[in-house]
Length: 448
Ligand SMILES: *Cc1c(COP(=O)(O)O)cnc(C)c1O
Image (cartoon, rainbow, N blue to C red):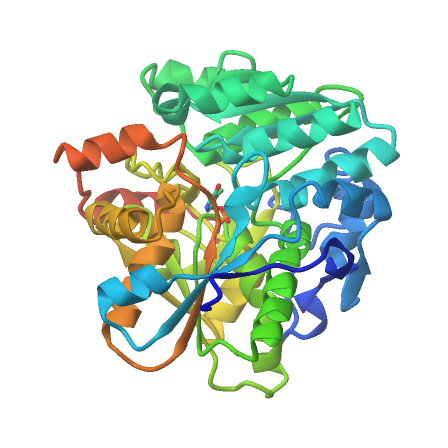
């Protein structure tokens, strides 16, 4: 009998997250205070984040213990299965062995609750009553709504307007878990009102929604802010994905030649890849290839410069050293809403800059072509974000090498069927590389 998937027992759930800051080839450049140009300290972050998350953000300890209460919630859906995509292999006629780690089995349908649960736990423990955040495609908002509900916290979500309109059921899901959801830009914040004044029909962007959420947190007692990607502690929590996948590959007696994941802010990709990248850093697996995939409409890693930039549109966040398209860049309204972010996680960017990780970009019609092939062979319908990874898997497997390809199946596409309708109806638009807009946005980068 050919096995199709590998499970782990609940008792095999990893007990610590892996912190790649212990093994970096050079230290991370610190976030800077935009006013002084000096590194920010933990005290600058205290108004918006709880102490333990600030500690994790700067920690260089290799292993950070997962609290029992967090593991207890993880066990609702974790450990997640690792599947062999045999039908896809057959359809491609490839000698490659293709595996995928299935993060779509969580209640919100993606990898995002891995960090949402941890963040809700630490906030609750430190006496916070209300959490506020932004969401793009609605995956992060629903993950945080799921987590805050379990820990008895209030949840306020600023949802990028184009997704709010394209994905009404994501909003419904957040409301089922008790969150208050508002379309961003909104009139609830100064940042939102200023953008609406300039452009009443603004589609919104993650950068704008972050500005609103940060302002909300900074102006309300008992409220803290949560970020679903980009920051070191978020990537840390996501390493549960790669640690499990590594164990599962060990059980199969396999080691990957190639790892693939999609990148919006970099959390699912990094969480999946970093425990393996460690073997590359230690010199144990020097030939391991790792590919990060993004949309051509928002080509941060493939076209952006490696510079200090703001994390948000309204210039409220510290400056982060990252590949960036400029914080004022508003990407075209592609269906992979979770990949419409102007920057990327500093940890991931450092490794791309060091050429330890490769990056590539695809236009959305080619991505949906692969998504459909996957849905019609493996039977599961991927999120448009995840489909970017699948497109790269298909391209690599078509080269017909005998190799082991493992990718992260970051989420399902059950709330994205309007995008599939558009593709099937020939109505899906491909956007040219938005060169002019990017050049304009890059010309406003701070000089650091
Ligand atoms: C949010 C999301 C992404 C992109 O975010 P990362 O932080 O880059 O992982 C990718 N896939 C799915 C399914 C998502 O929900």
